[in-house]
Length: 311
Image (cartoon, rainbow, N blue to C red; front, side, top):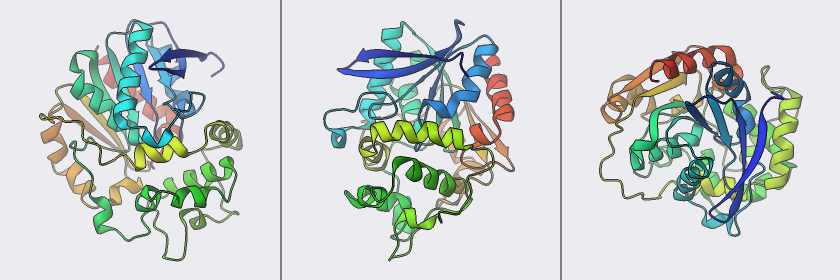
């Protein structure tokens, strides 16, 4: 991992941290989710670089080592998409493979929809492509559903504010590694769902946690709560939601996202492939929401097989 280079590029008025390794002409851009930063892709970046690809993993605005925007609460998914295209332009990269995890699926697919000439294929982990309309999961889940809580201005800030950043990341990693949706009782906050004595997942080390904790200590959580959780209603004005590029979904069977209302049926019974006709789906029986960190060698192999078949 020490081979990974860390650069900064200034676009759209902000300085972005970009982790990079490899020199191949075929470029793979990795887009993180929450509570992650570029570091979540450390295993995959080295693997694709060793296979002859150039790997790039930016921290979004307000995340990791990238600048925090002047008004984090005004950040949008459109900003994330425009930032990504601007970073690629700055680096002189015309066409890429996009790999998105968790909410990184949204910018990955929106770049593919809005700039199809820039995208060779899309790989997503943990979340399928969803049509560009506001999700309605919260309407059929209890009030304590974590996304509903974190969408409420001030609620998560107060909850997270009781702990240091490292503890917040620790708790979320433990929660998101389970196979049940995090839902708090009426008299609980989301952070209360994890006991201080609960161990980290076996594949996530104290060193990993320290890396995340230090970066969220720097950035805080203001931008991260805005995008994704408070931006799901955003309208991109997309009139044709059909994805025209090849795609791969890697889904852990023990991923809590499978418990979201309608998601398992959407993935397994063909609806996802109606919207992404070139979609392949691979299920990992023991996989959780963090398959890229839980089973890096297997995920690396799946990603490389797909990339090599679409060069």
